[in-house]
Image (cartoon, rainbow, N blue to C red; front, side, top):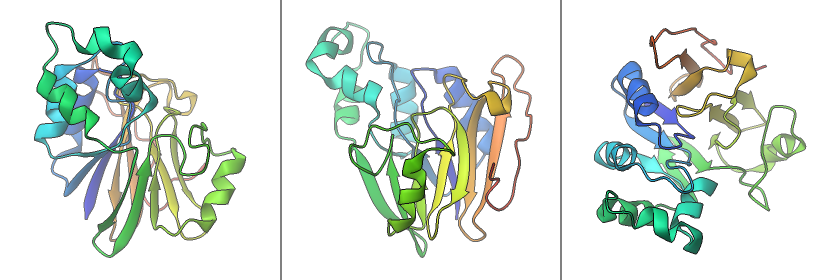
Amino acid sequence: MRIGIVSDIHANAAGLMTALDRMGDVDELLCAGDMVEEFRCSNEVLALLRDRGARCVLGNHDIGLLSPHGARARSADHVDQSLVQWLAEQPLSIEVQVGSKHLLMTHASPLAPHTQYVFPHSPELKKMKHIEADYIILGHTHAQMAHRMGRPLVINPGSVGQARDHTNGKQLSYAVLDTSTDDVLFDNYQPENQRAVPCGSGGLTAR
């Protein structure tokens, strides 16, 4: 299977559309959270994900919009309430079978307290080798990662909405996972010129 992975859109519809166009046809589309800004809802982002049948989990910004503090933002006249309802129906984490592989996805960390920023040097990463999954998909850091930790391959696609990753020149990015080979391909791009700067392909693309 060919799985497209996006995360941390932060209401950037143009960044998301560029990623979807560049990745082409995929068997599954995953979103690891932060579809909206905490107090800014994007009808276009939510509609794109819903209409593509994407499997999504809630990030901290999504939770913020759905909280009492986000009431004014999500009830604005321009906001499509059916999309807000769709957002509210998304889980905090998902566990699914993709072919013969078991996949776990959450926004920040699958380990309690579930809010950590997990980078390649984070202590939490080593603890994930005990999780019974073939793939663990994360977001939250806006930084690309593909590391094998025992059985699980831990993947963070970077961000299609807010570029913060110094390792790819602060470009937007997404990932495509091939479950037949476990190859992970990152694609980095600038929304203005949509120029790819390959971060790496094959295997773990580990740093």
